[in-house]
Amino acid sequence: FTPTIKVEHTRAFGAEVVLEGETLEDASRKAHAIERERGLVFVHPYDDAHVIAGQGTVALEMLGAAPNLDALVVPVGGGGLISGIAVAARALRPELEVFGVQSVRFPSMKQALAGEPIVCGDSSIAGGIAVKVPGALTLPIVREHVREILLVDEVLAVGDAAFQRKCLGKMSEVGQAGRTVLFVSHNMSAIEELCPQSILLKNGRVECSGPTRQVVADYLSSTGTRSQARTQSEGSRAR
Image (cartoon, rainbow, N blue to C red; front, side, top):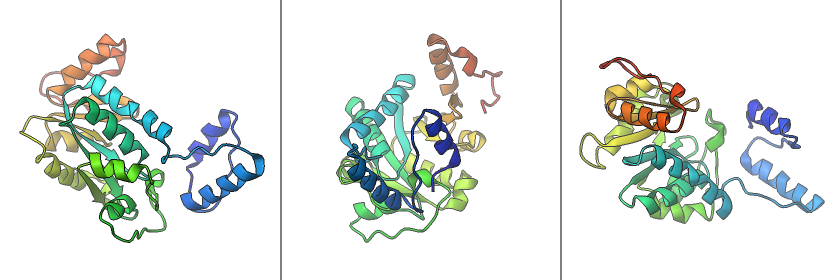
């Protein structure tokens, strides 16, 4: 259930890692048992006000780097990340639209918002958002601040051009052509083809297409990180 790299990195910081069960719910039950046995404090991974607030700093960084963003597309599991991002982003830019994305195998947030029974699969390539129970704190925040939850089939998630078209179809409803949308994706060429003014987060780098390329390059230069910005001749792609 938990990627090996996460376990290794957590242990490298000196933490004890206990693996239990096949789902987040299994691990949660074990964590609460250890909490009771050892008198520890349980920190919920997403349904905690402090965790939600901390994750809101992601939006502050995004808007600090690209203040004219018009929409954010955010992965959703239990809702902590999107709750923090939506609250922070819309506090600064009330007109900004926030969209959530879930795997069709784990559509728990979308189903909960619709008042439907929650029916999820058993596994997902997106383990970090394979959550069957949305948070009690996050659900009303998502209901108030998130425009829509989109579902993506995991086949599309691997070669995601079709899903990007679906997202961009929704983005077109946000405003006029030429507005800037931020994606978290790996397929820069497909995004640039579909959305000529886009920003991509990839392997810790900010990469962009169209007019946004120079904006981000200028920002990286101002923060002393110009080496991370790759510039090419006019008409070529930043990939």
